[in-house]
Length: 159
Image (cartoon, rainbow, N blue to C red; front, side):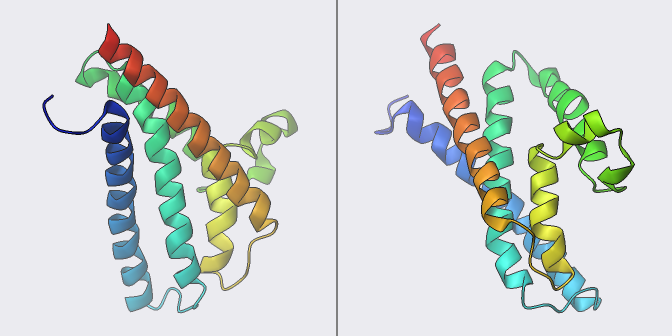
């Protein structure tokens, strides 16, 4: 409370810590992939900063739940109601083409679907289709989520 930082700085630092923590995990996964010969594409060097952006996006969204949490148990809602359905709809485990068309329209714009569409081709030594649109969608999700998280955190500390 006596540190020479504002609440906004603390929220930004939390976001960056979570994003870099994700980058540490991604780095380990990429090193294992390269060591096992799963991929030797130089495009993984481009995927690395893109995955930092994905980490930033998801850390901003997690900060919204952090601002709303009344206790530790609240975070199970983030995983159960938000991340788990997104994993099943994003094309990580099975192709999105198998989804009904109305669900596919929504699934195509989920942040995890966008991240998969952006990064998976690089793992396969290709460039993604529409990379600027995909990066833009992630940037919008990150910006809007950070703004909402900041507003909710400010409100929580005023109460």
